[in-house]
Every structure is written in structure tokens, then in C-alpha cells.
Length: 457
Image (cartoon, rainbow, N blue to C red; front, side, top):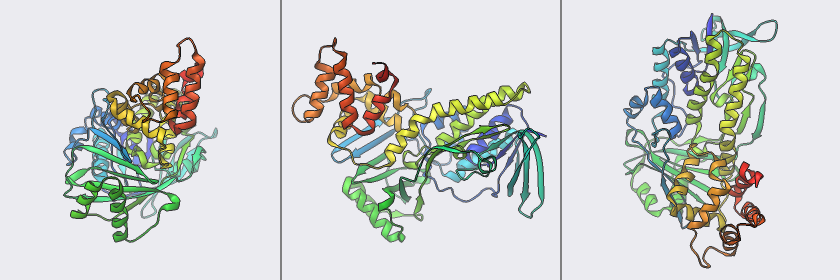
């Protein structure tokens, strides 16, 4: 009898098993793969909240030793507007890393086994065992040679990806579900100089991106709306990606032409959904319970945070031999509260809509304000909640960084007067300003009107 059976032994599953085993629980970790497995189709980036977890768990030095440099700044460029800002710190951690995915998997899995989790590879889940009340009490699985396995536990955790078998077997429904919004292709380049920065570009419904990763390599990629994406031979993809950079950063494009791609092109497309992530005797973590578009490169970070969130919720109940239901319900509430804002932000970002004049003026103002610039990239990196960044007070303060004169355009000038020039005893003026922002500034305005402060005003 195990305390917990975890199905899926990659990022979220290995992290969950490791934390539970370190807490003294008997954990069985199952995966249908043989490790070390193949290369994960991921862009590898781990934002500071994920790096904080690796540091807490004593694994950051191992990750850094794999040959990935620290990344300290993120940037966005659209047309003539450029924003590059330092990442805000999370409990003293203000760096991201982009380790090789297979090495990160191995580090977490080895830590789980070292902590005492029992790993069984090449085991496929076939059925969940339930008691007379319908509570999940174990698993029925098969080894590669069809040898049956039956094991029991107080809790079964599905950490088996977006096509989770555990989720299918328990009938975990999706909600806030949205289709694939874009498709991307990316690969690795050698001999590109780097300066510890993530660079992203938005131009003509294209989202180009690049940052340093492991072994002296650099990730280079391009995301396109689904309707514009075409599968093609590697040489054609080279030309497509280099052409996209040529339009936004000719100097970097020239470097691409002078250097070389050292891996095949990889392709990614992910739907957006949340799943009901708990029930009697079971829980979902990582991509099994929540998947969002990879355009913000937050998948690994979300998996690390989710594992910690689940373990923090269930540990007291496991320790006291109490009913797990309240703990699992609490986990679900905390997970939704943690991810819902960034889920919406990512969906908006994934549409790859071109910025209008007013949005560009706001981004230009963020580039002039270290506080706002850091907040903007912190939101991309899942550090700053969108509701906090797009609060009325924060957005109104941004007008202090828009220069006077006619250059910003009449809409910005009018809103600036309503926010900064109208008499303070006329609160309707500020509410009107917020409505105008919402009407002209895309998702920025949507978040502004949705913020609790705006609803109270």
C-alpha cells in the first residue's frame, strides 16, 4: 500500500513524487517511457518562479551546471518600439534559465528516486481501481511485456500530460477551453553571441523569439496564426524564419545567415484549457490539469509551481490520516486563483494581433519607466499577476511617461487629460478614461476594467 501513486515521471510528476518522498511518504512513480527518454518538444525556458522552486529544492546548481547561462532581461519589439527590461525578483531570484529538457527531466527524476520514490519505467496505466463509494484507491497497469500490475494508494496523481490517461479514466471535464491559436517552429543555432536576454518580436501577425540555451546554443523560432502556418522542408523553414527576423532585427538576421542551425526544426501547437483537477482519491497536476499556449514559454514553470501547490495541499491530510477531499478542493481553488489571470493573458498574447497606435504608445511609455518595463516582462514571466499590472493605479501612472505634445495622438492625449488633468473631485472622468482605454488598448483595457479596483470605482 502506497501513500501516493504518481502517473507520469517528467517535470510535474517527478517534482510531485520528490516532494512527497522527501516528506516521508511512500510514493510509486510510473511512466510508460524508458529513461532517459527522447528529447521533449519544448523551448526549455524556466521563468524565475520555476527557478525559485529549483533553488528551494536544492537542484538549481545542478541545472546551472548543465551549461545554460542565466537570463536576466526580457524584451519585446514591435515596429520602432523597443522594450527591454530586467526581470523582477521573486524572493531574491531574478534569473531565468533554459536548460536542455532531457537533462532537466533527469535531474528531477534522480532527485525523486534519491528521496525514496519507487520508479517503475515502461509501465502503462490501464485502469483505476475504485471502492464501493467510487473513490479511486489504486491502479491496474501493464509492463511492456504485458505483465499485469495492481497497486493501491490513498491518492492517485495524474501527471501524464495534456492527453492524460488519468483524466480520461476519471472523466475530468475541461472548462474555459479554447482551440489552438497559433503554431510555431523553432530550432537551435550555434555560434550566436548572447547577452543573457530573451528577445521577442511582434510584426505583421508574426511572433519571432530567441534566447540563449544550453551548450552555447541559441533557440530561434517563429509563431504564426494557424491559418498562416505551413509545414515545409527544413530549408524553407530556414528562409521563413530568417525573413521574419529580417523585418524586425536585420542585424540579428544577418548573424543567422552567417552561422548555422545545428538541429532539426521542431513544431508545436497547444490548445488552451483548464480541467477539473481533483475528485475522490485523485488529482491532476501539470499539463494534465491545465494547458496554455506556449507563446509565453511558461509550461515548465507552471509544472514546477503546480507540483508544489498540490503537495502543500495534501501533506497535512496525509500526515493526519484525514479525509483528502477538503485538501484537494483547496488545491483546485488555489490553482485556479494562481493561473486564471495568466491563462487569459496568454490567450490574448497567442492571437498574435498587431498592436495599434495607442498600444504602441503605452509600450513605448513602459520602455521609459523601469518600474512598468519590469512589470510588463514580469507578467510575461508569470511573476506579476495581470490584474496587478493592469490595475487602474498602475496604468494611470504610466501616463507620466508619455511625453506632452501631439506625437502620442489625440486619443492618448484625451485619456491623459482625463487621468491627470481633470479635477480629482470628478471620479466619473477617471471611469470614462478607463472605458476609453478598454475601447482602444486591446487586452490592456480589458484587464483594466476587469480589475477589482476598477469595479469598486
